[in-house]
Length: 116
Image (tube, rainbow, N blue to C red; front, side, top):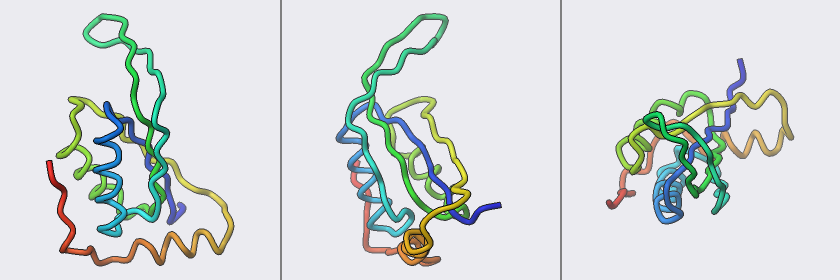
């Protein structure tokens, strides 16, 4: 089992993606948040075919941070059922993985707040 993971999330707005991503980076829950500003999703919702423009976010972090990150997203995003998935990083540049570890310490910066 790998210590390092990517967490994938889709947001209904770029502003929401930026706000939550900045909070997670500043609080040191994630080392990096990569925001793809515009994707188009096609899916079934309440037996209707839907199409939505969304932002895709990929977080780089440690596995042990997943539940905290998931809870923060759930409490602060606009979606009723947001995509929040985790993928293991099996291998990588050691210097990059070391940076992820250093950037996501066990402590959390308490002065950071997430404004609605």
